[in-house]
Image (cartoon, rainbow, N blue to C red):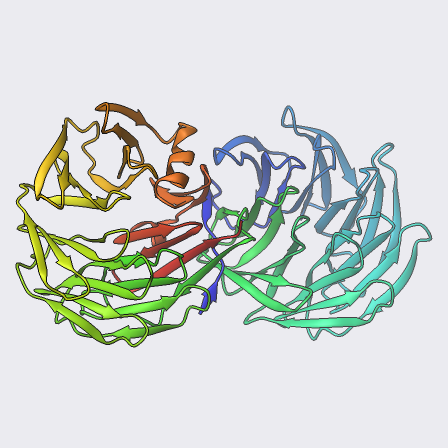
Length: 581
């Protein structure tokens, strides 16, 4: 099953009632929201309120920013529209003209005109220069939504009468009446190029219409009443908010559902994209607004839910990133094709899997767990060797292949070196302490061991300890280690996302934190990865790109290679993030 990543950046809490409308300022730095008769302005970066605007006597059902961001228009059930000066949070003008509740407002792209729709069935156009009004036309019932095309020459209106009307703003004439919906049209939105208008309805469908001909282009079918629509100006994706509490993102070119955002606990009544395409705001009757990170339309996520049924203990990528192995508490190993999400199962352990490792050529998999250390043939899933010796306990066990794949190192009571061709024991290294990470040098003559108190270098030919580095700068523990390509420097990656570089020849050390530009180059050249996780953020090429929401942040194990990250969870889920370069 394939989804796309949809992290919730912020949940904005402050309204005491259901949120009816949201709108971004043109630069995306401010979000306006309305609930009952209150309007909040929010700082989208911090997720904090800036202003509370009060002036309406009844519920505010719609808000919209002017194209230059200086004015906010709000339409209310008190039958008025207030124009607010955003910079000071004060009302500038109050527009009166509707005889019924105002349900929708929209600015023309040049900011010269404001359109409004009401329960009085009318659509009114307001001059922003003079505040004069003219009636464009009417529906047979309540007007729920209005939207301008990008050119400003067309206006779409959706109504409780189940129809959409396309209006020519220049002539004031109806261009088309579109009447294929079976229930109230709650929302209308134009594509960025103005060639398509989308309409969402209580009949649980979205219809895409050709603006030039008024013909139905495609029908998108959801699971529940559609309450809100918004187009992303960057990607062209269409988002829809439903009564069933979900947000669907659609590819209008294919009609395919690309992803579903889940997080609200009641209906999603309003949606808005920031103009730069980084964020989607959703307002819900659960009294909250959620900001979703959309900097990931080109980053695929595969969420595999039909494999493991229990706690995932360990994972490993093949060197080229095409395969992922995951091992669970039930002893099963699943080998996944990262591109397709398909997998095959390898069974042989009787209990929890402590560690997994692919051979450099990707033909073998080593697994450690439940008092057994096994080498597997990846192509056939057959056991090559069961390695006989001292095996790790439940909380121990690290595996690493030498660069040529001829030697496997396993940690237990000391380090055991195995001949992978014969399955025979080669040598035991008598080190003391809990081994947190291991890595071979590029010439395969040295094995580096990261322990809880120090780092040791061992000569695997003689079995002697060559060097030791004491006084690690971090107490968080070593997540991974890697040698530089020339083998002269060892990089230590700690769980607090700091790095320590050890020049083994000169015995010099350097510490880098996650704000250092050097971290990116070290991760690329040493660890063969451009993606990593720190403090609930997924970093890609040195930038904090994805925030992991609570349901995804408590993973039990992780691994990454190149532009691909995998996370494993207690409930058996494996999430693979593939970042598009």
